[in-house]
Length: 169
Image (cartoon, rainbow, N blue to C red; front, side, top):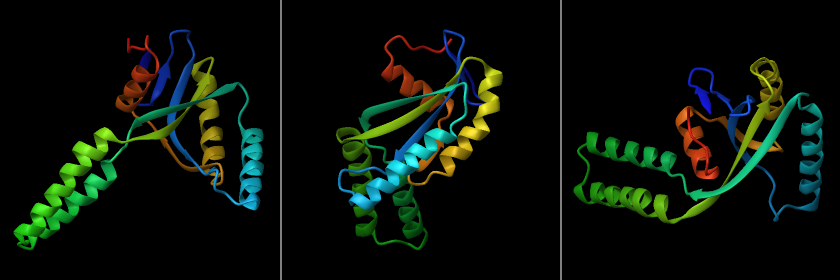
């Protein structure tokens, strides 16, 4: 598999091309019936907006909980406190929080993560359909709460842990 770091496009062994998105959906077992029906209608509408000649592959994985954002904000608080000559006890408390977040929560707790691979038979087809797909995903807030295209490092990590025979050429 080849990966173009500039465009984020993957070339698969069989000659197909694709991109990978991390997605967060809106569905839950705890929804009220009215909300559930709205989401079902939105999903149906989303699929009718999808471009032709592309395949949408959904991957669901169980991975270590991602703590990047929490760690970043914790470090910001620590730096601000330090800049104002922070109290040593508060600094130690933040250090302890950071350690727990990175070395315990980020390693021992798992959560469900979902990804979408948009795949086409050739690069031209994919490049033509990407803007349509992006528009459909971003205009469907009931279907996707968030959509983020993965970079090469994240794609390699995801595919190498999901597919035993995956490797970058």
